[in-house]
Amino acid sequence: MAKIAIDPVTRIEGHLRLEAQVENGRVVDAWSSSTMFRGMELILRGRDPRDAWVFAQRICGVCTTVHALASVRAVEDALGIQIPDNARLLRNIIASTLDIQDHVVHFYHLHALDWVDIVSALKADPAKTAELAQSISDWPKSTAGYFKATQERIQRFVDSGQLGIFANAYWGHPAYQLPAEANLMAVAHYLEALDWQREMVKIHAIIGGKNPHPQTFLVGGMASPVDPNTQKAINTGRIAQMRALAQQALEFVSKVYIPDLLAIASFYKDWAGIGGGVGNYMSYGEYPLSGDKSAASMWAPPGVILNKAVGSPPAAVDQAKVAEYVTHSWYSYASGDEAGLHPWKGETEPNYTGPKPPFDWLTTEGKYSWLKTPRYDDAPMEVGPLARTLIAYAAGRPRTVEVVNSVLGQLGVGAEALFSTLGRTGARGIETLLMCEQLLGWIEELSANMGRGDLAIHNSEKWNPASWPKEAEGWGYTEAPRGALGHWVRIVDGKIANYQCVVPTTWNGSPRDAKGVRGPYESSLIDTPVADLEQPLEILRTVHSFDPCMACSVHVVNSRGVEVNRIVVTK
Ligand code: NFE
Ligand code: MG
Image (cartoon, rainbow, N blue to C red; front, side, top):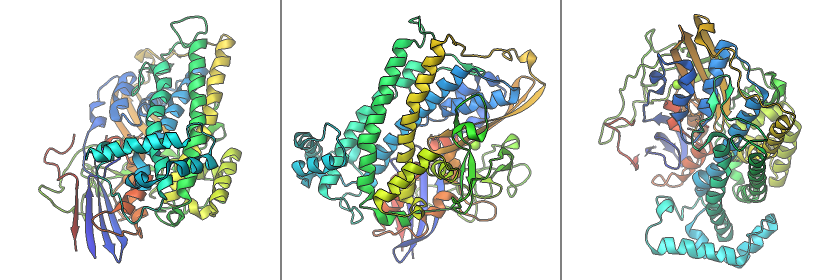
């Protein structure tokens, strides 16, 4: 029996530490700990609720914008505000653009190197690489000369002795399975995706002036004027620009990302049996297709699936069933640390009792993370692209069913393969493709509204706080790239009395709850093979498949912080 600590986990956002017990080459127990406290919820207290989104959006620069969206929706829910149709469309366009860009960046820049060995790419034959690439896609860049130039670029990195962004990985690890040519193809696309993602987020700049943190939200709608006849608004030219960027996105995703995903997955089918986790999935639903907020009018349907039951329609989501525990988190609740609190009654009172330098193991029987432990109806929930895809699949959404079945068929695996590390990574790609198809539709809808003279972007009916009730509570939700995101606000006398964010990575990365039940990361690591304790590549594969973001989930690093970049092994 050996115990290992990985701290920090890299190629994620924020500060995550994992501890795992390994026996006979397999993980038998695991603990997930966020080592960072931020207190964003506290700085919102006492402020004007109409300003909250500007602060909340700064929770994260990776899933930028979703916190602004959840925030304005929470206040709109509290005050009973309906938004104009153009605001719905602008919000859908901004959020889906983020989702597409974030998923591609995750696949190539945060996750691919768990599967792709850059150093092996140096041994590839560029002509054979071109043959391979052309056999899976008609992407025009796939020539021998192109792959040779990529290889020379990597060689220059290696010769300089400074791998830069490619340093600190486990190159040559026995768990890497791809032939050299597939490695070279993937590295070439890693570099291409860097350029592509910069173009894609120009949609945010067109609507909201910049990325990250587009500056265009308003309680009651949006602040981006739409008018085909003026340079000072989103006009016909801007629509054409967005349309071109969305078309480029669909091209890149369908001709590069998806073929790469399928090609890489075909060498790692054993990962369809590893990394499943809690088996419960939740989505709040997102992308309203009309002003109606019913489940049927959400492009990504809301729902809850328990115990992998995708054969029947998902249950409805009731936000009243969300509660956060701090039994194993570095916080204290006034009423004691055993019971969970619904976010409207939520408390953020730090109580750090964790490791001290130079090195200390987590006290896992007590508190061991800055993440709280959210539970739905007392059960742990996995959230994110896999949850959304399974819920859309179980709800019988035709395009999801079609693409999921096609991907399973191409890989020659059954539906049970979805509940795994590979399933999580595959679902993210499937969702990206479907969302690219849909994004173009929202741009056309906005254009059609403008064409018929509907230029409304904001509903100012309740702008004056004198029109608000003395007390109000609201819930704002969205499906962020990493999953279900909720903001809960209590407004008293026109000011924020309480504000709580329960974020995707809080759901997925949470420590155990009061009953000792593991969170999704912890649970998914059980049974993961570990070939080399000093190079726990397999653990990173599973945890990276969730796309962790600790910045979001704890919403300043402990100044006495634990040692960084170190793997500690005890045998
Ligand atoms: Ni900082 Fe985020 C997303 C939100 S969180 S990345 O997606 O909300 O886990
Ligand atoms: Mg929170």
